[in-house]
Image (cartoon, rainbow, N blue to C red; front, side):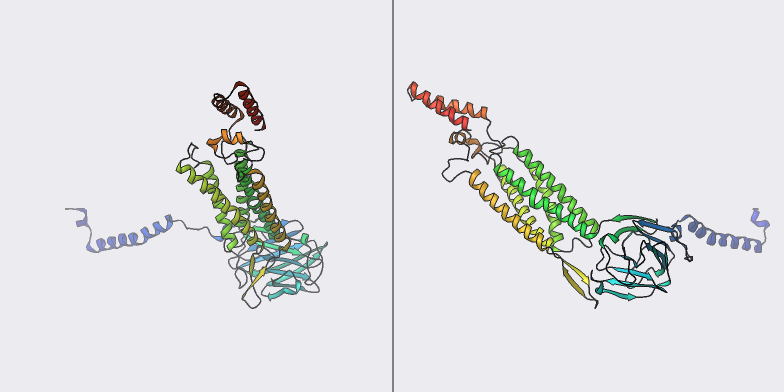
Length: 451
């Protein structure tokens, strides 16, 4: 009695087959249509040219006299490098000149260009490693040299990842053929191949100098100064020494973090050496020390609590440890060795020359030790218990809750001292004649005036 009874068996089989076909083909097709790809294709970049049209470059970056233009396909990249010179122009990959690979070219009767390994600043150590460039051409016009070439994105020397920025180097010179260039005729940059943008970067020797100065100021100047203030300045600035101490430490940690940021951003594998590892550890210690002094400082009581005593020993010991390791790490930074690939493919270590800086740092450590010895002799309590230079015995006696003046965090104020002196004189006066009491009082006022 249903509609299916009106259809033949053959028609029913045909309808079932069509439905099955639609199910098998339609559902997967629908799924494929709704699933988006996980990454955008390379062709979305404005610098992409699948055919690498000869003489056409879609992106460029200019820094001073130097300019690089480029386009890339799936497997190759076309370059045009130029500078204001009638000699050679070079362009390579790396964070510093020495150890990098660069294409260097110049014009004679023909175009001369090849890939070189920059083993040293000495031009005799600049070695040709390959001539696998293609479509090489050269042009000199209007006092400007332009070298054009195409290279593979991946070679045994350099792999270019077009999806990530690359650090590049460049230089030029007015001579045809290899010759040393002037410092000002070179530069470093970070280029984004996909976006067609670039940013100038400081040369690594300049970055090393800035890094070294920041770390030296932090660990060799500001932290020792903060410790000296804490240990010796209380007698001279009883109400201000703590703020000076904190200010020096905060300023020191700012310089330390700045130096660490320069190293992490600009140096290759900055944490591989002992110097880098110790430097990172010291910066962390420095931050912990400031937090310990500011947030974990127990209140001062009379007598001292065990917690306060433990905090004082920990804070002082930790600070001394940071100073000692910081001074040692400066030496490690000045004597660090850089590993470079040798001509035979092995590794060679090149020691950076910082002889004058090592001598100056050694002299500075001697100066710190001499200053500390003088301050210990002049400002710390004597063995006889006579007190600090410039502080009378009565000042020590009336400030017993502070133990020894100069060690206290809360040096007694003159008004408080005066009240305590009056009490002591009143007690003493009961056993003296009036004229003796007057003499003692006068002596006490003289002592208080000395304080």
